[in-house]
Image 1 (tube, rainbow, N blue to C red):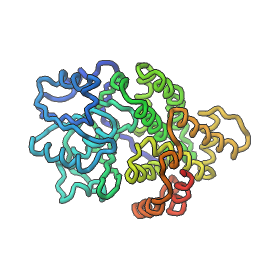
Image 2 (image 1 turned 60 degrees about the vertical axis):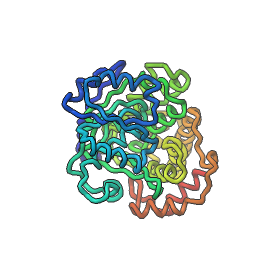
Image 3 (image 1 turned 30 degrees about the vertical axis):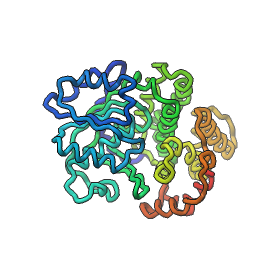
Length: 385
C-alpha cells in the first residue's frame, strides 16, 4: 500500500534559453546580493557576464572558490564575509556543490548555536536562514529544487548532509545553454548522479504506486536515450535541455512520494569521496551496481519490473532478469565513460572497516527495509573491488 506523505516544494523554476536575464524580476532591488560561485568557469563561458548584466543596478558582494564537494572551511569564510557585509540575499551560480554550499551559508549566517558544524553533525533544527536563489550550470545533484545540502570537511574526512525547508531556493534558473561548455567528465558524472537518484527511490519494493513508478521509469528512459547524445554532441540544446530537466525531476520529491527509499549507495559513496576525493558520480557508478547485486533478492520484484520496462528484457526466470538488469545498468555507466570498480582508481580495501563502522555509528541499519548493517556494508564494498 502506498505510504502516507506530505509534499511541499516552493521553488520557482525558470527554464529555457536566455532566462538569466530574468534575475531582476526574481530578486528585489532592495536586497544586498551575495553572489557565490565556484572556480571561475562562469567567467569563461559568459554566464558571469549575463548575471552581472541582469543585476547591474544591485548592490553585490562576490565570493568565489566553492569546491566540488564544498568544504566546510571555505563555506565558513563565506559566512564571515556575508555577516560582515550584512547580506540579505544569496545567489549561487554553478552546479550542485555551489547550491549545496549556499544553503549551508544561508543557515550558518543565522545560526545561533556555538558551532555551525552542528547543523550537519547533530542536525540541529534551523529557526531562520538567509533567502537564496540559484542559476544552475551543471545538472546532476538536483539541489536546485530541494531542501537538502551536503558538505564535506577535510580535517575530519566527513561528508554530511542537513535538510531544512528554510533553505529551499526561492527560484532556480535553468538555461541549458550554460551546460554546453561542461567538461565531458562533469557531464557523465551528472547523468549517473541523476540516474541513481531515481533508482534509489524506485528499486526498493512495490507499494502499489504505479504513477510514481511510471514517472521514475520515464526519467530513466530519457536519461538512457538523451545522455549519450550530450556526450557525443555537447552543444545539442534539445538533449542538454532534456538531461537538465531529468536531473531536476529526479530529486524534487515527486517520484519519492509515498514510496520506500534506499539511499545506501549515496551514503557509501559519500564516504569514498571523503576519503579518496572521488567525484560523487564516480562513487555512485562503482557502488550502485555492487549494492544491487548484493540486495537483488530483497529488491527482486522491482528489479524484474525495471528489467522489463526500462531495459526491455524478456525473460521468465527472475534471477536472470535481475542479473541482466544489473548488468545493463553497469554497461550504461561504462558507455558514458565511467569506471565501475574501485581498482580502476587504484583503491583497495584498506578503509572498508573504517567506512562500515562509521556508517553504523551514525545509523545502525540502512536500506529501505533497514537490514543493511556493518556486515552487509562490508560485503557491498568488497563487491566494488
